[in-house]
Length: 221
Image (cartoon, rainbow, N blue to C red; front, side, top):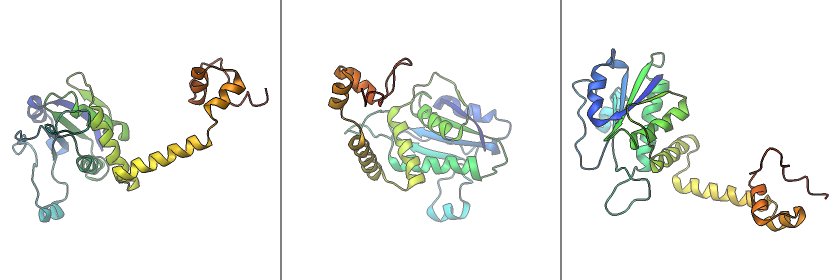
């Protein structure tokens, strides 16, 4: 299992891995910006760029998962490339393998780096940490990229439920419509409880202080 996650900048990752007491128990998620050269871990770890045939033969003996995307937290446009859904899925498969399958009885360290070790790597680290309850050590103060976290959430849901991002949106929309179809209307709550629009909306959303009563007590008043 993965015992800890270390988030760090690109210029520190090779040094930190070299200091690890047992590099056989190290795995790495390496994030580069598009068109930048990937870091070469071959002197320290098994870092193979497998062909399809080699992947079938060797599986995930590879210790490094390479990705490239820009540090943007919104939808893509002409000049930047965000994290793609498929990259999130492959990242979850890599993490699951090292945490649950490969040498499962051994305690391993997952290093995650991007350029600065603040945004992209922090987002992936938090996503994996929340799923598997793994502590994170960050070399720099993290500011996780929201778009990366959302994409990681989509990737995990795909693996768990088999839903593509479009299917996830459609399912969420249907669930939301069902909730609102069954919920009391704002105008009804306002009239029945003699509330302002803001108070009634807060009540419907479940936003109330401890001394306020939940919705439903007004039905017979």
